[in-house]
Image (cartoon, rainbow, N blue to C red):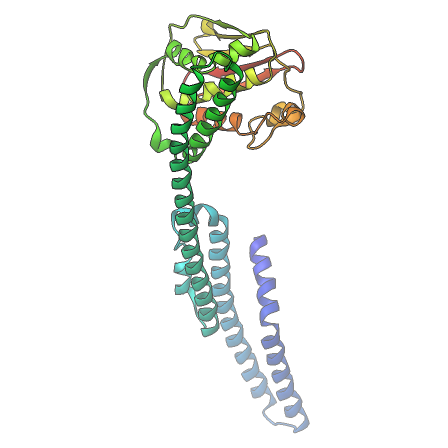
Length: 339
Protein backbone atom coordinates (compact mmCIF):
# COMPACT_ATOMS: atom_id res chain seq x y z
CA UNK A 1 0.00 0.00 0.00
CA UNK A 2 2.81 2.36 0.91
CA UNK A 3 4.53 1.67 -2.40
CA UNK A 4 1.33 2.39 -4.34
CA UNK A 5 0.99 5.77 -2.61
CA UNK A 6 4.61 6.55 -3.41
CA UNK A 7 4.08 5.55 -7.04
CA UNK A 8 0.93 7.71 -7.25
CA UNK A 9 2.72 10.75 -5.85
CA UNK A 10 5.61 10.26 -8.29
CA UNK A 11 3.15 9.80 -11.16
CA UNK A 12 1.28 13.00 -10.29
CA UNK A 13 4.56 14.91 -10.13
CA UNK A 14 5.61 13.62 -13.54
CA UNK A 15 2.22 14.36 -15.16
CA UNK A 16 1.54 17.59 -13.26
CA UNK A 17 2.22 19.78 -16.31
CA UNK A 18 -0.40 17.92 -18.41
CA UNK A 19 -2.96 18.08 -15.57
CA UNK A 20 -2.46 21.79 -15.08
CA UNK A 21 -2.72 22.40 -18.83
CA UNK A 22 -6.03 20.46 -18.92
CA UNK A 23 -7.47 22.45 -16.00
CA UNK A 24 -6.41 25.72 -17.63
CA UNK A 25 -8.10 24.62 -20.87
CA UNK A 26 -11.34 23.77 -19.04
CA UNK A 27 -11.19 27.07 -17.19
CA UNK A 28 -10.60 28.95 -20.45
CA UNK A 29 -13.71 27.42 -22.07
CA UNK A 30 -15.82 28.20 -19.00
CA UNK A 31 -14.69 31.82 -18.93
CA UNK A 32 -15.27 32.27 -22.66
CA UNK A 33 -18.69 30.62 -22.39
CA UNK A 34 -19.67 32.81 -19.45
CA UNK A 35 -18.47 36.05 -21.05
CA UNK A 36 -20.24 35.25 -24.35
CA UNK A 37 -23.43 34.25 -22.51
CA UNK A 38 -23.54 30.88 -24.21
CA UNK A 39 -27.16 29.78 -24.16
CA UNK A 40 -26.40 26.09 -23.85
CA UNK A 41 -23.90 26.47 -20.98
CA UNK A 42 -25.37 23.36 -19.41
CA UNK A 43 -24.43 21.33 -22.49
CA UNK A 44 -20.93 22.79 -22.35
CA UNK A 45 -20.61 21.76 -18.70
CA UNK A 46 -21.87 18.26 -19.57
CA UNK A 47 -19.27 17.96 -22.34
CA UNK A 48 -16.53 19.08 -19.95
CA UNK A 49 -17.59 16.54 -17.29
CA UNK A 50 -17.63 13.80 -19.91
CA UNK A 51 -14.23 14.89 -21.18
CA UNK A 52 -12.88 14.91 -17.62
CA UNK A 53 -14.16 11.37 -17.14
CA UNK A 54 -12.36 10.16 -20.26
CA UNK A 55 -9.18 11.95 -19.26
CA UNK A 56 -9.42 10.46 -15.76
CA UNK A 57 -9.87 6.98 -17.24
CA UNK A 58 -6.85 7.50 -19.51
CA UNK A 59 -4.85 8.76 -16.51
CA UNK A 60 -5.85 5.62 -14.57
CA UNK A 61 -4.66 3.36 -17.42
CA UNK A 62 -1.47 5.37 -17.69
CA UNK A 63 -0.87 5.07 -13.92
CA UNK A 64 -1.51 1.30 -14.03
CA UNK A 65 1.13 0.94 -16.74
CA UNK A 66 3.48 3.22 -14.78
CA UNK A 67 2.97 1.18 -11.59
CA UNK A 68 3.61 -2.08 -13.44
CA UNK A 69 6.94 -0.77 -14.76
CA UNK A 70 7.99 0.46 -11.32
CA UNK A 71 7.21 -2.93 -9.77
CA UNK A 72 9.26 -4.70 -12.45
CA UNK A 73 12.19 -2.35 -11.90
CA UNK A 74 12.04 -2.82 -8.11
CA UNK A 75 12.01 -6.57 -8.55
CA UNK A 76 14.99 -6.38 -10.89
CA UNK A 77 16.82 -4.20 -8.39
CA UNK A 78 16.24 -6.64 -5.52
CA UNK A 79 17.72 -9.59 -7.42
CA UNK A 80 20.21 -7.63 -9.51
CA UNK A 81 23.48 -8.96 -8.08
CA UNK A 82 22.34 -12.57 -7.82
CA UNK A 83 20.69 -12.78 -11.23
CA UNK A 84 23.33 -10.73 -13.08
CA UNK A 85 25.97 -13.37 -12.36
CA UNK A 86 23.70 -16.19 -13.47
CA UNK A 87 21.97 -14.36 -16.31
CA UNK A 88 23.67 -11.27 -17.80
CA UNK A 89 20.57 -10.66 -19.97
CA UNK A 90 18.28 -10.25 -16.95
CA UNK A 91 17.12 -6.79 -18.13
CA UNK A 92 16.47 -7.64 -21.77
CA UNK A 93 12.76 -8.26 -21.12
CA UNK A 94 12.34 -4.60 -20.21
CA UNK A 95 12.50 -3.71 -23.88
CA UNK A 96 9.07 -5.31 -24.23
CA UNK A 97 7.72 -2.77 -21.74
CA UNK A 98 8.63 0.24 -23.92
CA UNK A 99 5.62 2.36 -24.82
CA UNK A 100 7.31 5.51 -26.08
CA UNK A 101 10.19 6.28 -28.40
CA UNK A 102 11.97 8.08 -25.54
CA UNK A 103 11.80 5.00 -23.30
CA UNK A 104 13.04 2.86 -26.16
CA UNK A 105 16.02 5.19 -26.61
CA UNK A 106 16.90 5.04 -22.91
CA UNK A 107 16.64 1.26 -22.93
CA UNK A 108 18.80 1.07 -26.03
CA UNK A 109 21.46 3.14 -24.26
CA UNK A 110 21.21 0.87 -21.22
CA UNK A 111 21.55 -2.30 -23.30
CA UNK A 112 24.53 -0.85 -25.17
CA UNK A 113 26.18 -0.08 -21.83
CA UNK A 114 25.36 -3.60 -20.63
CA UNK A 115 26.98 -5.10 -23.72
CA UNK A 116 30.11 -2.99 -23.25
CA UNK A 117 30.22 -3.99 -19.59
CA UNK A 118 30.04 -7.68 -20.52
CA UNK A 119 32.85 -7.23 -23.04
CA UNK A 120 34.93 -5.46 -20.40
CA UNK A 121 34.29 -8.28 -17.90
CA UNK A 122 35.33 -10.88 -20.44
CA UNK A 123 38.50 -8.94 -21.21
CA UNK A 124 39.26 -8.61 -17.49
CA UNK A 125 38.69 -12.32 -16.93
CA UNK A 126 40.97 -13.11 -19.85
CA UNK A 127 43.76 -10.92 -18.43
CA UNK A 128 43.26 -12.47 -14.99
CA UNK A 129 43.56 -15.96 -16.44
CA UNK A 130 46.75 -14.96 -18.28
CA UNK A 131 48.16 -13.49 -15.05
CA UNK A 132 47.27 -16.65 -13.11
CA UNK A 133 48.88 -18.81 -15.78
CA UNK A 134 52.05 -16.73 -15.49
CA UNK A 135 52.12 -17.04 -11.68
CA UNK A 136 51.61 -20.81 -11.91
CA UNK A 137 54.41 -21.11 -14.49
CA UNK A 138 56.73 -18.93 -12.39
CA UNK A 139 55.98 -20.94 -9.25
CA UNK A 140 56.80 -24.23 -10.93
CA UNK A 141 59.93 -22.82 -12.56
CA UNK A 142 61.31 -21.30 -9.33
CA UNK A 143 61.13 -24.70 -7.63
CA UNK A 144 63.90 -26.08 -9.84
CA UNK A 145 66.69 -23.72 -8.65
CA UNK A 146 65.42 -24.05 -5.08
CA UNK A 147 65.74 -27.84 -5.29
CA UNK A 148 69.26 -27.45 -6.67
CA UNK A 149 70.14 -25.01 -3.88
CA UNK A 150 68.87 -27.47 -1.26
CA UNK A 151 71.11 -30.21 -2.68
CA UNK A 152 74.10 -27.88 -2.47
CA UNK A 153 73.26 -26.96 1.12
CA UNK A 154 73.09 -30.61 2.11
CA UNK A 155 76.85 -30.78 1.48
CA UNK A 156 77.60 -28.04 4.02
CA UNK A 157 77.85 -28.69 7.74
CA UNK A 158 77.13 -25.10 8.76
CA UNK A 159 74.09 -24.61 6.59
CA UNK A 160 71.31 -24.81 9.23
CA UNK A 161 70.36 -21.14 9.03
CA UNK A 162 70.56 -21.16 5.24
CA UNK A 163 68.32 -24.24 5.10
CA UNK A 164 65.81 -22.51 7.35
CA UNK A 165 65.64 -19.46 5.08
CA UNK A 166 65.33 -21.69 2.01
CA UNK A 167 62.47 -23.52 3.74
CA UNK A 168 60.69 -20.18 4.30
CA UNK A 169 61.08 -19.32 0.60
CA UNK A 170 59.60 -22.69 -0.33
CA UNK A 171 56.69 -22.11 2.04
CA UNK A 172 55.92 -18.69 0.56
CA UNK A 173 56.10 -20.09 -2.99
CA UNK A 174 53.73 -22.92 -2.07
CA UNK A 175 51.41 -20.43 -0.40
CA UNK A 176 51.26 -18.30 -3.54
CA UNK A 177 50.60 -21.37 -5.68
CA UNK A 178 47.74 -22.51 -3.43
CA UNK A 179 46.37 -18.96 -3.18
CA UNK A 180 46.10 -18.84 -6.96
CA UNK A 181 44.15 -22.11 -6.91
CA UNK A 182 41.96 -21.19 -3.95
CA UNK A 183 39.22 -19.51 -5.97
CA UNK A 184 38.73 -22.72 -7.96
CA UNK A 185 39.31 -25.18 -5.12
CA UNK A 186 36.04 -27.05 -5.69
CA UNK A 187 37.31 -28.34 -9.04
CA UNK A 188 40.60 -29.44 -7.47
CA UNK A 189 39.24 -31.53 -4.58
CA UNK A 190 39.77 -35.29 -4.50
CA UNK A 191 37.86 -36.57 -1.48
CA UNK A 192 38.63 -40.00 -0.07
CA UNK A 193 39.13 -41.73 3.28
CA UNK A 194 42.49 -40.89 4.84
CA UNK A 195 44.34 -41.87 8.03
CA UNK A 196 44.38 -38.75 10.21
CA UNK A 197 47.71 -39.72 11.77
CA UNK A 198 49.40 -40.01 8.36
CA UNK A 199 48.13 -36.56 7.34
CA UNK A 200 49.36 -34.94 10.56
CA UNK A 201 52.79 -36.60 10.35
CA UNK A 202 53.13 -35.55 6.72
CA UNK A 203 52.45 -31.91 7.63
CA UNK A 204 54.73 -31.97 10.70
CA UNK A 205 57.63 -33.55 8.79
CA UNK A 206 58.00 -30.45 6.60
CA UNK A 207 58.77 -28.33 9.67
CA UNK A 208 61.44 -30.63 11.16
CA UNK A 209 64.24 -28.14 10.53
CA UNK A 210 62.31 -25.33 12.28
CA UNK A 211 61.57 -27.51 15.34
CA UNK A 212 65.28 -28.32 15.61
CA UNK A 213 66.53 -24.78 14.99
CA UNK A 214 64.15 -23.18 17.53
CA UNK A 215 64.48 -25.99 20.08
CA UNK A 216 60.72 -26.62 20.23
CA UNK A 217 59.50 -30.03 21.41
CA UNK A 218 56.74 -31.86 19.55
CA UNK A 219 54.18 -33.83 21.53
CA UNK A 220 52.30 -35.80 18.89
CA UNK A 221 49.54 -38.13 20.09
CA UNK A 222 48.68 -41.42 18.43
CA UNK A 223 45.78 -41.20 15.98
CA UNK A 224 43.64 -44.14 14.94
CA UNK A 225 40.84 -42.12 13.35
CA UNK A 226 40.01 -41.82 9.68
CA UNK A 227 38.46 -38.85 7.91
CA UNK A 228 37.13 -38.19 4.44
CA UNK A 229 39.05 -35.28 2.97
CA UNK A 230 41.42 -34.07 0.27
CA UNK A 231 44.96 -34.98 1.28
CA UNK A 232 46.75 -32.05 -0.35
CA UNK A 233 44.43 -29.28 0.82
CA UNK A 234 43.96 -30.66 4.35
CA UNK A 235 47.72 -30.96 4.86
CA UNK A 236 48.18 -27.42 3.56
CA UNK A 237 45.67 -26.12 6.14
CA UNK A 238 47.47 -27.97 8.95
CA UNK A 239 50.79 -26.56 7.71
CA UNK A 240 49.46 -22.99 7.99
CA UNK A 241 48.46 -23.60 11.62
CA UNK A 242 51.83 -25.18 12.43
CA UNK A 243 53.64 -22.35 10.66
CA UNK A 244 51.89 -19.80 12.89
CA UNK A 245 52.57 -21.84 16.05
CA UNK A 246 56.28 -22.07 15.23
CA UNK A 247 56.50 -18.46 14.07
CA UNK A 248 55.32 -17.05 17.40
CA UNK A 249 56.98 -19.61 19.69
CA UNK A 250 60.48 -19.39 21.11
CA UNK A 251 61.05 -22.72 22.82
CA UNK A 252 58.51 -24.72 24.78
CA UNK A 253 56.44 -27.35 23.04
CA UNK A 254 53.67 -27.87 20.49
CA UNK A 255 51.05 -30.52 21.29
CA UNK A 256 48.78 -32.15 18.71
CA UNK A 257 46.00 -34.33 20.09
CA UNK A 258 42.29 -35.21 19.88
CA UNK A 259 39.60 -33.92 22.22
CA UNK A 260 35.85 -34.50 22.70
CA UNK A 261 36.13 -38.16 21.69
CA UNK A 262 33.74 -39.16 24.45
CA UNK A 263 31.00 -37.01 22.87
CA UNK A 264 31.32 -38.73 19.51
CA UNK A 265 32.97 -35.67 17.93
CA UNK A 266 36.38 -35.76 16.29
CA UNK A 267 38.10 -32.54 17.36
CA UNK A 268 41.79 -31.97 16.64
CA UNK A 269 43.72 -29.52 18.82
CA UNK A 270 47.06 -27.92 17.94
CA UNK A 271 48.37 -26.23 21.08
CA UNK A 272 51.47 -24.07 21.44
CA UNK A 273 53.17 -22.13 24.26
CA UNK A 274 53.89 -19.06 22.17
CA UNK A 275 53.07 -15.39 22.57
CA UNK A 276 49.32 -15.86 22.21
CA UNK A 277 46.83 -13.51 20.60
CA UNK A 278 45.33 -10.32 21.99
CA UNK A 279 41.63 -10.64 22.84
CA UNK A 280 40.68 -7.78 20.50
CA UNK A 281 42.48 -9.50 17.59
CA UNK A 282 40.80 -12.90 17.96
CA UNK A 283 37.54 -12.10 16.09
CA UNK A 284 39.50 -10.96 13.02
CA UNK A 285 42.29 -13.54 12.69
CA UNK A 286 40.59 -15.28 9.73
CA UNK A 287 40.15 -12.08 7.72
CA UNK A 288 42.20 -11.63 4.56
CA UNK A 289 45.29 -9.50 5.20
CA UNK A 290 44.71 -9.07 8.96
CA UNK A 291 48.03 -9.36 10.83
CA UNK A 292 47.05 -8.27 14.32
CA UNK A 293 49.31 -6.92 17.05
CA UNK A 294 51.87 -9.75 16.81
CA UNK A 295 52.17 -9.52 13.04
CA UNK A 296 52.62 -5.75 13.03
CA UNK A 297 55.14 -5.88 15.86
CA UNK A 298 57.46 -8.42 14.27
CA UNK A 299 56.70 -8.00 10.54
CA UNK A 300 56.46 -11.81 10.30
CA UNK A 301 52.85 -12.12 9.27
CA UNK A 302 51.28 -11.77 5.83
CA UNK A 303 47.69 -12.10 7.05
CA UNK A 304 47.01 -14.72 4.37
CA UNK A 305 47.78 -18.08 6.02
CA UNK A 306 44.84 -18.32 8.44
CA UNK A 307 42.51 -16.76 5.89
CA UNK A 308 43.37 -19.52 3.42
CA UNK A 309 43.17 -22.12 6.17
CA UNK A 310 39.59 -21.07 7.02
CA UNK A 311 38.54 -21.00 3.37
CA UNK A 312 39.98 -24.47 2.75
CA UNK A 313 38.45 -26.06 5.85
CA UNK A 314 35.05 -24.56 5.02
CA UNK A 315 35.23 -26.17 1.58
CA UNK A 316 36.23 -29.49 3.15
CA UNK A 317 33.26 -29.30 5.53
CA UNK A 318 35.32 -28.82 8.71
CA UNK A 319 35.04 -26.13 11.39
CA UNK A 320 37.93 -24.17 12.94
CA UNK A 321 38.06 -21.92 15.99
CA UNK A 322 40.79 -20.53 18.25
CA UNK A 323 41.22 -20.07 22.00
CA UNK A 324 44.16 -17.91 23.00
CA UNK A 325 45.40 -15.68 25.77
CA UNK A 326 48.17 -13.17 25.35
CA UNK A 327 51.44 -14.53 26.73
CA UNK A 328 49.93 -17.96 27.48
CA UNK A 329 49.88 -19.69 24.12
CA UNK A 330 47.19 -20.62 21.60
CA UNK A 331 44.90 -23.58 21.00
CA UNK A 332 43.54 -24.11 17.49
CA UNK A 333 40.60 -26.50 17.29
CA UNK A 334 39.40 -28.34 14.18
CA UNK A 335 36.05 -30.11 14.26
CA UNK A 336 36.66 -32.95 11.82
CA UNK A 337 33.12 -34.32 12.16
CA UNK A 338 31.40 -33.45 8.88
CA UNK A 339 29.12 -30.44 9.32
